[in-house]
Image 1 (cartoon, rainbow, N blue to C red):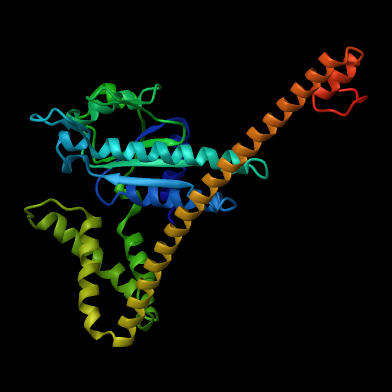
Image 2 (image 1 turned 90 degrees about the vertical axis):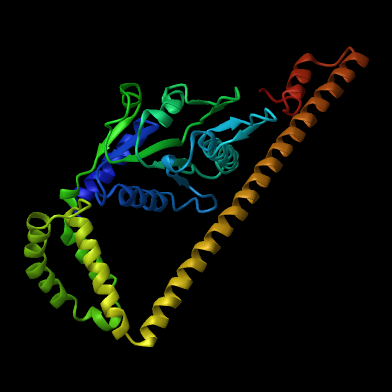
Length: 345
């Protein structure tokens, strides 16, 4: 990865450590989603010793794709019944995940100190006052999402609200002042990083020609981009990165018919294997999460039984002292504290 991209990942991690509300500001192809994905994978590697629980849960939605009634919830005009929105449901899921992780952490803390659990709710879309004003109470230090139904959802530690937007032209100062900011510049990434990433994904039959393809890109893309961005008029404005991405997609489409059927089969098998591995990992995470919850419950029951045994011992000692006045008071105190008679506590 490029040093500017690594620096942005470090800034994002530092901002998430101090603020539970973070805004990632930058144009398309600036690396906002890629930085989040890279940070998530890095946090998973750091927390590798605790592989029994999902360390980071991420939910992503576009707030402008839904009306406010479906985003936060609304009352039915006919029946006057409340219907939860997408944000409320996702918030409850993250709160429940934080609670289960805390119970499992309490059970595992006897043997090791596990890394913290994290939950990210990512709003990938334009920021405006129509929908984000309802998030102000959740972005405050109180961390409470207040719904129109009167319900208040309190966000525990570990849950972060992340906003990906191109700009803050429609955001209010009240919202901006409650969040941390990380700015992404597309110029720091550059189109050469996209070409190198594309060359790394070439099939085996073309991987040997990767140096020649890179030299061709270095020779042809600068003048082509200069003509496309300055000498031509486009109905939709585009940047260098979007043009290069479209160019690489066209090259893929032209090369695909010339690849052998074996290469296609290998690519399809690799994709299917990756999908199966992800499904298996999700199933293992769900199973281990329920197992850790059961373990925490059993440990609580054992501690409760131990306390009951101690109370029964104390009651028996008090009964014996009442029936035999000659019982030594020091022995009674030692016995009630769970120590053998004659042992100083």
